[in-house]
Length: 340
Image (cartoon, rainbow, N blue to C red):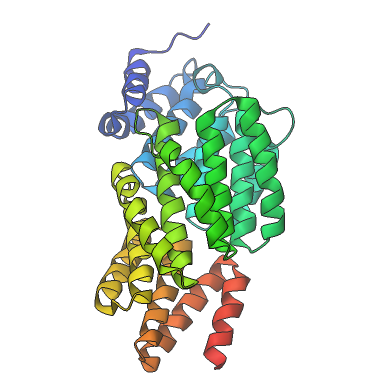
């Protein structure tokens, strides 16, 4: 029976207490030590996954993806399964990162085994929520709506009110992206008190991030569709969850929402500053889809200000970035603007 050595145990304890500095500072030496000891080598995948999850928490997304992908590849059949189980929780973390960084094809490939009937309801729920995000991203809202019902059923099976609220938050996001902002706001108002609960643990951290995404998404879409009252209310509600998560991504989401709402409210100077900050934040995190979105909103601002000569290259840059991501719906929409 494998008895882990002291270095590994100290590393694992640091991970469990959330000591990211120690995890990242000792991760490579521990990997080297385990790799050099045939009896301990089976623990390498566990270390890779723990480092990857820590990098994800610290928002070093490309590095996190690399560690998580390697750890999941090596995990099956090793002693590390006694430490990290089947790895499904780490696979769901990776899915979130793949979506955020625009690696949509890789995300789709990883979703498929996680929705198989032999997986736990919690794993299937997480993977189904990723499916919903993918279909909505590519404009297939009918399939996204169908999967929302599947996700709600899985949340009931898990028996978690928090997860059920997160699914309803997904529903609000999909409705907002369809332009159905009145319905979206109604769902958001129902679930935001639950989503915004503060507390320790990854579930509440995910839930807080969901509250930030719901409110900022609704604020943007309500503003674009002319409902400034709802937009400004959602923007106000977005401030607390965006701050409470401590994530740079959520701070950038808030700035993006502010830029759009302020632009539609005629506050062009403040909108420009917010959109620039949002784009810089997304680029620093390698979140290409959100960065392209911020670029498009900058182009819209320039057009609103009557600066056609400035708007065109901004639209063209956004178009190129959306094209690189395979987001043809956005490309087609920008092409229509550029032809006018």
